[in-house]
Amino acid sequence: MSLLFAATYPERVSALVLWSTFARLSWVPDYPFGVEQQLGDMFCDQMETAWGTGRVWPMISTNDSPDDEATRRRYARLERNSATPAMASAANRFALKVDAREALGTISAPTLVVHRSDDPVTPLEHGRYLAEHIRGARLAEFPGAFHFSGIGHDEDALDEIERFLTGTRVEREIDRVLKTVLFTDIAGSTERAVQMGDRLWHELLATHGSTVRRELTRFHGQEVKSTGDGFLACFDGPARAIRCARAIGEEVGAIGLEVRAGLHAGECVARGEDLAGVAVLHIGARVAPQTASLCVTNCRPSRCTGCGRR
Image (cartoon, rainbow, N blue to C red; front, side):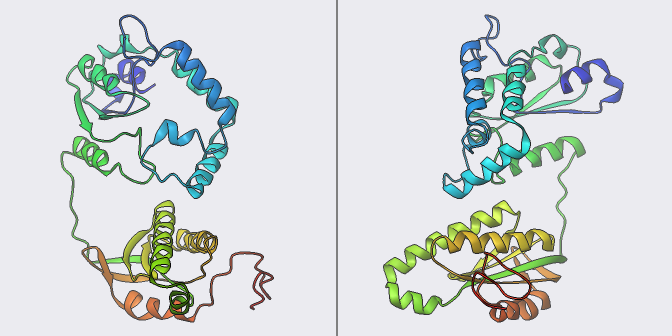
């Protein structure tokens, strides 16, 4: 649609950015790197059968996210929330019929073609074709074997798009920022370490760390530092921070650990990748030790029916 719009209404288009896309997807003799119709139809059939299980989205979008049960549950929810199986299949069947090659020669807007070198969905040849057939277009090729990242690995492409559209990428010197800080630590970590022994405890800590980092990525949190059995992280607002704390409690609980989580919103001093200031060093750091272990089931205002605490 962007190609056709740019060709039809050039006076209304100041620039065109084409990210991992194509003018045509299916194979014909004069477009040999397209997908064969039979394979495309088979893929759409499989998509309609598997959509909503969490097995389709990683295949069509990203190969850089973790392959674990929590990630699959998240992708399954994403699939169910975005389309029905029939809608998802129909959209991809339509893509197999698209052919906008005749419009390319009439596009006059400045054009940037962004593509991953090993894109598994839309191979790089599609991007090269666009760049070669749109007058003055420039191809920006980036490494990666994913269509677009599932865990925020697209900063390189986004930086290039910003430079293309604005002429420069502005680096801002940030001193003070308003952040919601999250502190977590494992309840009874010393006792557990003594009971389990060094080797088993360090293995459990590694699993805990990867679990927390996965949830921080999911809720767009930024890890500031790790203390081994705890984390300091920050968010741009309290809502995601609260949901992240709850999710961490659920996921860490599944491996037999309890976490204490404390949150505080306030002005922080940015020191490179670190944060300082009253919100972090004084108020926030004193919140987490005062919280009970996070219980994540059956909570009510008067008493938690999961753990019995008020």
